[in-house]
Length: 307
Image (cartoon, rainbow, N blue to C red):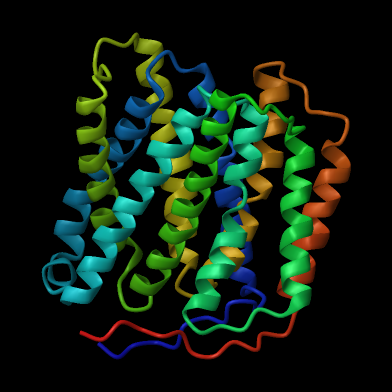
């Protein structure tokens, strides 16, 4: 199968991708409120959302894309598995960070994903103009305003902040790796390998951390199913879908709008009202994102590992 040209790191996404990303943002925005309302360990929730998704995807992919799945080239298979490990790392660092630092600080720091994505893009040969860096900084600052980030310098809070920051890096690296796989592999095949890998890694993490995986109430299982169908299938899977034609930097940047969506849902569902700076923060996210995607892409072709 011939390799396709990778999408430019700063080019505006196609209209179809924009529509899919809006739907994906709405879906992943339900993740935080559902997790907060589910009476189950956070890491176990992360495991089940990936395990349930894998349980549906594996038979579908075997029935519809068996030849592609079994015919994956070694590099594509390695990258898909690596993306799954990175996604597991994202869940395994960011989720525990919420137990050590404030939700606002953890959310703001994990929202540094577009910064990490741009740094990774630069590492692979792309040139990031100053205007784009400024736009990313403005958008991330807007996300911090929406969350009402606070400052706590206790050792415990700093450990949580570090975990959230690492979670942001893992999330960006997961997007970058997925973008490479999606150049030649269908969404179904890639997400099947990725989610199954994530499930296995998180299962090991849960066993090591002695997280109970069963014994939840019926209401908790209903929320887990809702999380799987919404945030996982419509959220992560649609983001994986657009990675074929929209760069990981722009996709990571669009995910900042999850902060806004989650804040609005938390206000209506959990009565956790957003901070007064939420509206200015939203405007900064919009302005920063606009500055990035309107910047002329002067990227070179990304460097690809040699077999």
